[in-house]
Length: 389
Ligand code: ATP
Image 1: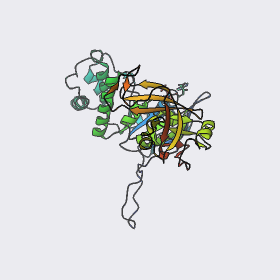
Image 2: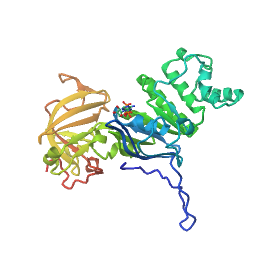
Image 3: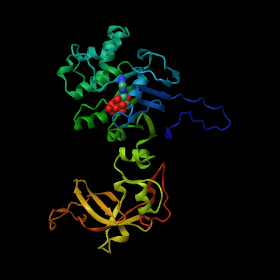
Image 4: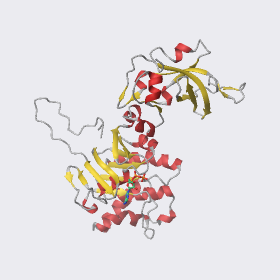
């Protein structure tokens, strides 16, 4: 783990001479957790602290170890090494039903022969909660996910989004301190997914339960999370709030996985920047001006920017923005995106494009503010201020 972000685990104390506040234990702690399956290290020395009340996402490509970590927290897996703590209590040796967590699975796992209300109340029945209380709490959970009036239906009489909500209500009704969600929106179409993202976040804020959310969708993680842990090959590469993760990725893997990034590998960086190392820069941070248009120059790419000259090799009009590929004179290619704020279209061109857009073959100067170039773990302050030395 490289960065735990800024949220505090220690209760704040303003009085310097007063008693020292007791540390508040994290809701979930994974301490040096390793889980092997044969030669595969599904989790490889994972250290994580998830704070109480956080919406925390485990993000990474397929097979990177997210679900394994969730199962380790739930108790469905036992670590080969390391410890699992819930609110400071070591639960490593406890079975799932003795942990104050609930899991929402991607396939919802609803009982088809039971009504929606009975599905939701099932966990309470197992815990021998008296029937009137059971029904009341199940009805409250149903209202929380906005499904009042659906209690008598069977799961197969519901849409995918409604089934997802029932699964959520079934987990929430137990009032766990931590809710584990394994790609719960994966089966939904894009529109419904976006709607459920908003609803999940709202519900989490309403109930104040810690949510640990597994996803491979970086947009989803950015939209919903207070903090995100990025996984790669069983390891946690970076933990940070969404904006920090996007603006200051610790390495090229995070820069490429969370959003799109230009990667300047060492050989190219040497040629383009005159610097050793690997650099990343986001396409939307780069601005361009036409080298044939002397008037445009200083306003677009300032003297303090890092700059490089090249030729537009490809143009893709994407509606809200245009994406360019620029072949740099120094040999690398840069992807540059620019918003299309103007509504007028230049119809004189063979393929009509927004006014002000560059055409294939245009000689351009590309520039980016120095602070937007990331290298290794930090933003680089490039002294000479030019892609081309
Ligand atoms: P996905 O997004 O595809 O669900 P993930 O990031 O959740 O992936 P895991 O399911 O945690 O990844 O799997 C991590 C690695 O461990 C993978 O290589 C997977 O094949 C392996 N693995 C997980 N569970 C088992 C198991 N029960 N037996 C053998 N290998 C397993």
